[in-house]
Length: 358
Image (tube, rainbow, N blue to C red; front, side, top):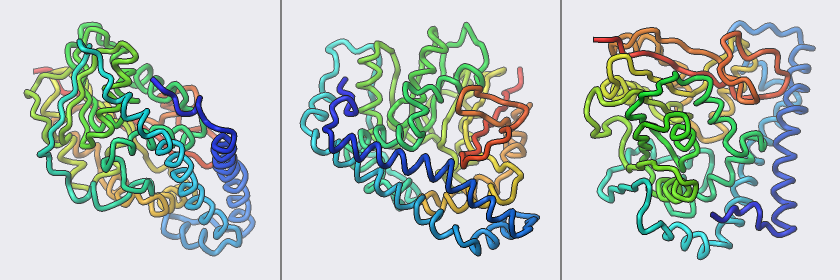
């Protein structure tokens, strides 16, 4: 399939490199300078609210705040221009599915998208991820820059499948909730080659792109447009239910309903694994995560952090519920913690639980 990045003009490449460089320096230079400025005040905040108030008083904070939001807007403008200038070619590519596909694509034009999904331009992406077929290409291209080019080849998602998911050589069905354009689903097909792998998402554009890319990669994956809170799959039919970066984009009740559906789907002994964020315990760093959510149009971070999902898993009849830090750079699941990292980074963590044997 066409990789837009390999076809960029010199001007487009320069724009991408500028945004990427700005994002890197914001994370590895501006943020450490901000923490030094905070330390110089002698501040020792006891909680996130206190740290947030202190943060907003720092001289460097307006630059830190402004740069984060501006770079995100620049990212989508750059990605959008690159994609839309190639609309016809990309649309033709989406339609060019083999006569005998390995997997399948099931779209539901009557699916009612929830207001909490449609009312925000999540990540500040104009029109969101669901509005147009090209929005999936824009998000796919932009996500490379968001991850500072450290997830090229979807290394991050491969680390998740390799380090956080159980060895199940006889697995028969694996479900990926909120699969987007398939970056999280394709590694599952490689991890569980004997299983039926199903990706579920609300957005038809993402699913069209996911299906096209899976077919191009020779992977048999079934993509279905649907709501992760009510998949329509039989109870007790799945060995593994996963989701990556999806719960933090839902309000509290929707998070609970999604986990309840996952628990319903699991076979006895089946594994639930959701890659998300957790607070680190460092009030200043955690305050910047809260601030990120507001600047990046992700209004439900607080719902995730304010929900005791370990207790929710227990209430749903699951056992061994835990949160484990996840290092996206090279180690994957990292029980010893996130380590000493001076740069700003997402506090990735894996929610794990098990359906008890009957």
